[in-house]
Image 1 (cartoon, rainbow, N blue to C red):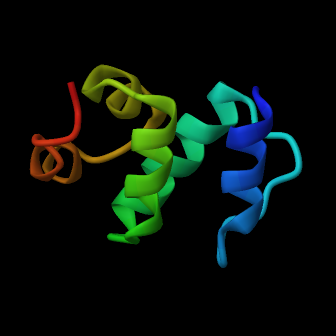
Image 2 (image 1 turned 135 degrees about the vertical axis):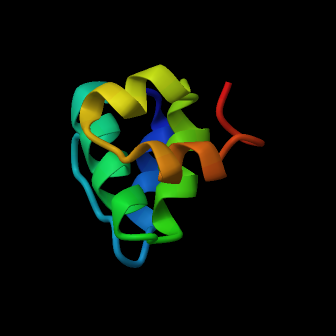
Length: 72
């Protein structure tokens, strides 16, 4: 992960991670999507997750379908 991504993640008010792997990020994004938390959008766009990745991580189909415009 580059310096810029580390800075962006550490600036978050609710999501402050020191080291975040892609696997941890997709699990966190799925959990936040199920809770209708807006912080999921930043993780999805930061890492460029696909709908399939987030569904496999445990997000509900309805939550992923509602994000159709930003998920590939």
